[in-house]
Image: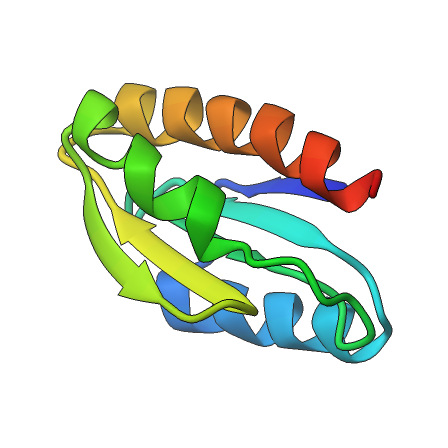
Length: 99
């Protein structure tokens, strides 16, 4: 599971990185600090549901977002909440990706 942070790229630029990782069959979480956005995706060969982790965590970090079983995008009020959400999401996804 790749975990990346971008201090200078907006959400659309980060999304391109996520899609490239996804197409290379990599699971990935990327934080766009300027956009206070977290984008996560599973590799194209994976069958587990990323939204089953991502969506339930939103409320705890006051985020909003959505997505599908393979890609999820969430936006937060501040950088601290985005980073905390990404860390919690990483823990959940590591458990799912292990199966």
